[in-house]
Length: 192
Image (cartoon, rainbow, N blue to C red; front, side):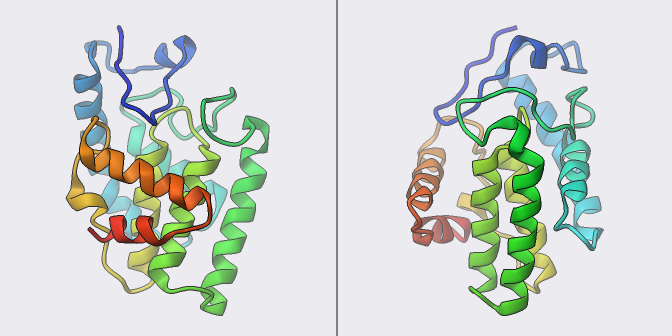
């Protein structure tokens, strides 16, 4: 089994690939399609949840999104990746993130859209899981904004951001600009 990863992706290690549950999958396209079905099944559950700003919910959502795909769904990564925090710091950094977002919401620190987009960006930056971090972070931001009375983000008009496209490139560039503290492009992309 060999996968072609688009720019900005986190390649899976051999041990992580061994955790693939459906043994019939042999291509990246098959994997993406299978994961997408799994994610769609998780969405109704996600939008019914109340307390989403916890490490427990972050793990539960990942598990729901990928439980039919990966044996390790919902478990924090235990190795270093090409992006993200040191793996042993993931639980602590997620707790700080959740506390920060609660504080921002209580104090109206930013608009609700900006709080959700900043949440998404930091979640992607921490990169808590071996796979699916961008999709997980986008769904987390969607659930957060809906809970605040807003509508779901469109994230480039729901383009498949797992493929190498101009929309994915735009998304990655918006994340890179946000890395420098400017969230304007990511805010625009989230509502484009």
